[in-house]
Image (cartoon, rainbow, N blue to C red; front, side, top):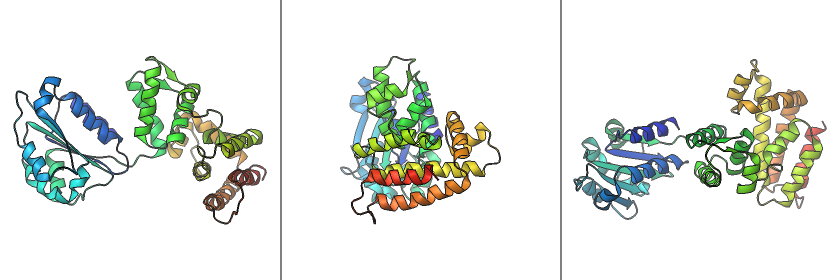
Length: 336
């Protein structure tokens, strides 16, 4: 994320590179953001007509891309060429080597290389890294997303409750593109300076603030059986939006964090938040849960979850409803 911010900041300062080779193997959000900024902001509207092109890797050859890049701009300081679906040119990548060694400085050539990554041992990639900008999106983990949400909203003069942020991550995972679309929706509805609350998320995105996996783990942590069973019943009635395998994954992650919590010598809020990868706001919840679930019970829960994971995939359960599987797990864990 930091590298993407650095690239965008340089662009805003008009520090342009002759080539931007943007790679997004599993996460493409920052590839799209950087390319979009270049497309919208480098040239004026008058300059774009003659000096900006969007090409598609499946429709052009690398030699055609290079030929276009060698042209000079018309009545502008730069020309911009954006190659989308650049991964379609992977077998022709070596042809770019000579150009990457001595790129046309009045051309800003952008490659959007998605869903795979090039062989970093190739000389052409080494030349791009030496003479231009090579950006590769690192894998994004769920525990990194809440901070990104806070930073993204802060840039637009918005803020968000930790619970509301967790609701978005739980519902959408680490898919930054989907999360950003939902944030854009909320920012269009709310005036600048607003704080996004769980109620706002529930009302405008359709994520229940009371019946979700986040609230389920909270109920388990404080041993609130009534609330936990209400949530499970809701899941059973809305199984399409609350698939059992996903819930099992969330529960496994929760008890894994409790396992880590028990192993920590330094249980200060700062260290717990860092080691568990959670917002400091939630560290007290793990402290309470750890008292309710000593190390032996946490290990037992994880063992039960392994069995539940197999059952959630339809192995050895016959026609037993998913809700009953979860209820059985809760009874064994919360009443032990």
